[in-house]
Image (cartoon, rainbow, N blue to C red; front, side):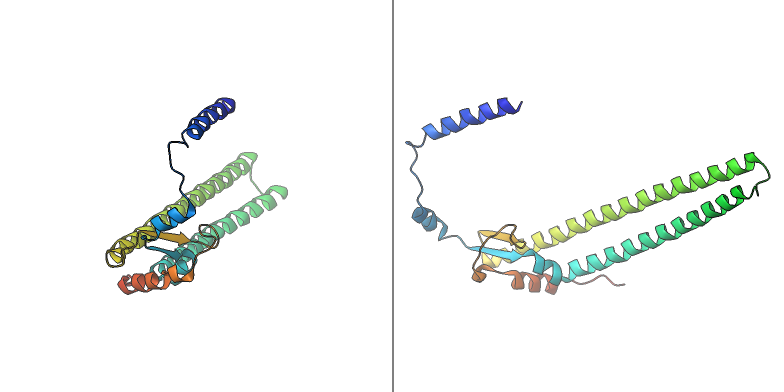
Length: 193
């Protein structure tokens, strides 16, 4: 299959390479002239995440929920561990009235362990769903604001910049992060607690 894909790529490349005489090559000067009419800006996502109050509130809520999940699971795991230790002591000391009773207790502990695993999966899944929902809300909030913001500012292109992921270099004159954060925070009203 990879050989077939490589062959198709070579054929396409050779077809495209043959058409260069019909197309005018774009020089850097021409590209700059075409882009000179464009209005471009970028937003530093790291700063946006750290300073946008909505994002801060979402993160704090997720930290609290994660902590609650962790505490709940730890409490149930400790209870299970204690029950297993008690079972082990009773078993070693022949404290069960019968082998059947020991098996019943062993099965009960196995069921508790399975229920704990199911609860863990359910709670972790709930956290992931909540995190995905929060990410969508965050993105929708930014996109809605940028649409409104751009009605007045008329940018052709707004990049996001996360460290060196998207932009290797950009003049700070194109950085509109502070304006965006201020605008987002001005229109954000936190939910009543």
